[in-house]
Length: 115
Image 1: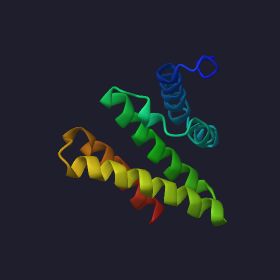
Image 2: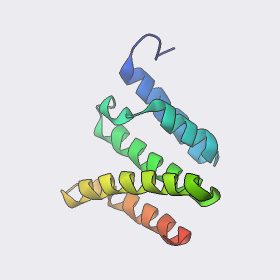
Image 3: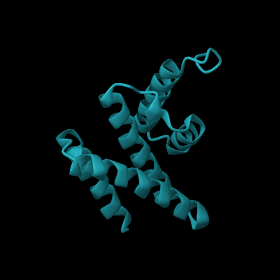
Image 4: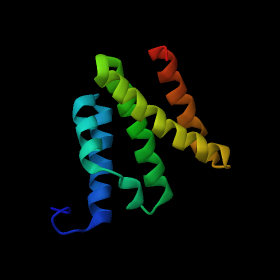
């Protein structure tokens, strides 16, 4: 596999594609497991599109997982989601207009959650 060959870029790209599939099919538990296992993929995705897309999917995954969780697990997912959203807000604040639509989607998910 890519991870055993220590090809970090390939491994990060494969994780991004897996996350895309999990989100598409609403498999939030598998998506959270992947995000946790993958770690900080952004440092290996050199293309800005891939890094931004992964960050958005990560935030969405945490939000959706928090909606179905309870107790400390819900608080933990909520905290991770807010940290990731904060990162995207920083990008938008510093002039990256390509992430504004992601923020609208994430704000809508936050509104649905009532947070």
